[in-house]
Image (tube, rainbow, N blue to C red; front, top):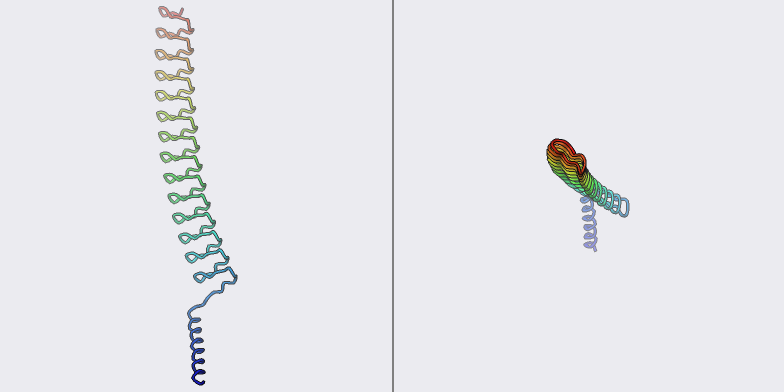
Length: 213
């Protein structure tokens, strides 16, 4: 009996000493709510909260990446920056703020259909950039470093023919579709002719011996 009592007392004493020893090295913090957790000596206050890299992600879908908290469930942290929207992207250390936005050559193309060509942004979906200039309309063309402003416009010999049927002949623009340029002069009507450096003004006119008949 005495042996049993001694054994029991010894066991209780050992248990007490063990608890005291453990208490001296572990000082836990109490998580006060049923869903709260204690992670790395910090309290995650909500059931879905997480503590990542010694920081608490406050929302269930929040993430902590590279020691920063991405505050929304679809947020991402790329190159140590947070892309604030689910469809946002961070490219070349800049955030493309819209889901369809792109960042090309360190610039952000702000619209989904925008393009960046030769380090410039074509601001409209149908715009083009040719020879380092932006053709502002979908049908515009840039020829010989100039922009033809209309879809049917042409650029001839470094000049823009402003109408779809216009022509440029010998460095001059024939302004009408039926106009002709003869010997460096423009015959303004479709039936007009230029004879011996003079203009026969009517379709049936003739020029005889430097005179118009």
